[in-house]
Amino acid sequence: MSQAATGLSAARRWNLAPKQAIQLQRELRDQLILENQLPAIATIGGADVGFEDGGRVTRAAVAVCDASDMTLLDQQIVRQPTRFPYVPGLLSFREVPAIVEALEGLRRQPDLLLCDGHGYAHPRRMGVACHIGLATGLPTIGVGKTRLVGEHEPVPAERGSWSALRDRDEIIGAVLRTRTRVAPVYVSPGHRIDLPTAVRQVVACLHRYRLPEPIRVADRLASAGHF
DNA sequence: GCGACAG
DNA sequence: ATCTTGTCGC
Image 1 (cartoon, chains in turn brown, blue, cyan):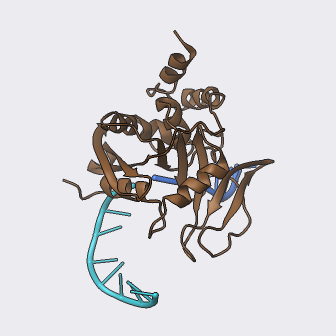
Image 2: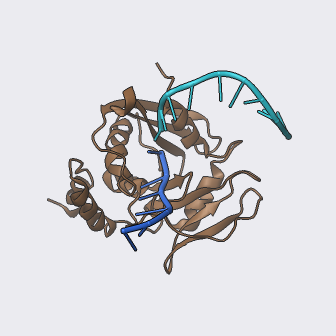
Image 3: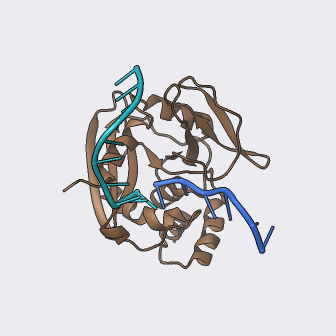
């Protein structure tokens, strides 16, 4: 079996106990590519998940937008029985299986995927965006709404400003102001992209709200109220 | 031992 | 994440 195939299967191993999941994250971390390996970007996807039935059902949503004007081109919603509890640091084992299935239902894969949640800005540098990237091979970016790890200087109030997010001696992400005087978001590389490029791509997806369009649309689809 | 802790 | 009405402000 090729190394690529071996890596893909390892990144799709979901039925693990918390301790084994943490060990797998340490192994997967070495497979991350933090350099740009991007195709010409014509489409950008967004992914998010919501829950139903008191958390027993996981609903994943992915939206694909035209990179030039953020027009919605395709969308997919899938439901799966929830298979893992919420454990800070192990979010991917709870959300990624459903997101991968949703992605497989698209007519065509996006050139880049923005994920709701952190990427490299994770205790073991393996947030949901990184895991989705390794499980699919897609270039990914993590966009979190609140901090998981790291510290940073205050971010200027103007839209587009950002401060480096640091953990120990390493820069793990950027705290980006997507709207003037609105709470910033946490951007970090997922897979096949570097931080400066990730920030630029997120800024390019901003329209009128705090979250970049692809994620905002996926958010709507994944949130309650869709029959 | 005491906090912190994505969604 | 989810449970939930109205309310303040551009």
